[in-house]
Length: 542
Image (cartoon, rainbow, N blue to C red; front, side, top):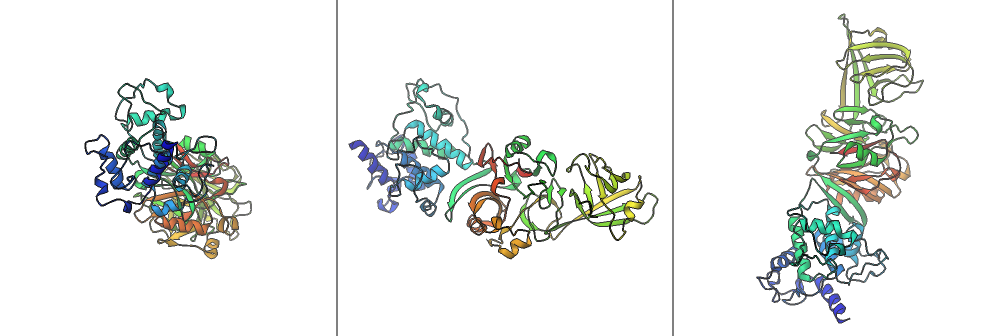
């Protein structure tokens, strides 16, 4: 009983503010000899503000460290004190009330997936932390942050390996190979042995010295009271694309299948789409190729854009296509404007449309006029009142019915041997070199400030209060001032989400499809999802 009271007291003292320590305490504890094997590790954590002494000039290196205290060390590494205060609520464990000193730290760790408790609804915050549970917690922190722990030594065959719990084996092995936690001289590991304050400090200091940042940072924290899960990265480090479900603009595919098929490192659901037809809403571009044009709410509709230099931005523009027929006989060229891409017109619609293999292998419906064009731009066939195949390296320009004005000269006079050139303009965009673009919306951050109201939402085509007003599970994309991209998911309304994105340093941000479409994947783990709803497309980074 006395040992447990002492452990609780030392754990509480661990949390005392640094101001309670005498001057110079960060560099000296009377009970930590400078030559001790753990001395540099302890002082390293004290200097980081992660660990403190147990009293004036004392550290108590041989005292047991509690589970709650070890979680506290991890939490203090990741969050500021103001961020930690947002976790002062009744959490999931029955043995940790709001008044318990470890409550906010354990709540963060639970929410971030760093700890799972004991399976019976308890956590045991005041119980000593075991060696194997330290290994589990630090490797869970790796996953929660997106960092790596390089192996520097061969796997060890511990004499008591069978005593390592099944849930801890991989973690112990990873920490051992990284030189973070070692066995004893007799060849054993001692998975259930209690970790002293000195041992815990050594393990965690080594871990922090050896973990390495990757191509992205995963973020689990609360911002303005909203729990967010996010990934941040430099878009220049990735190859971005828009992946179409089953390779066509009206396809449907599960989020898990998207990730498996494309080999994505990062994937997020993107544009809204019609649930009945799976037609995406908004223009999409991938690899510099226009997949679909939807100018219904252009140029107000916001899009996430990556240009040819790899720079990300949020822009609003209209996509214009003009077809120019150049006759083989030298007659005057004929032009047709306001052409869209891969949008099936109704049987009474005279809109001119370009169909590519992103639509499918054929149109799938009969049209009044069709010009089949090869990859070189040469007219291959001119067809009337029929369906037609779409060439793999070319396209088909159609009008389902002639326009009422009778302006059909291009379709009436085109012949095989002519050439058909397509001119494209992103009207209103800051660059014509758009490699990837997804029409999203509404925009929620502009020039580093909260943006949007009912009028701007409506201008982008959003009037449904389920999107514009109510709280829902959402995903969104932000671009920070330094050009880094932030993909985030949270349960919030647009107003709260915009404030979250500003607080996280976004210069511009735009909402994505949400609700049952919300999915965010990062390198082997789903920060949210995978959900059962089939998707039309996902934004992919490899």
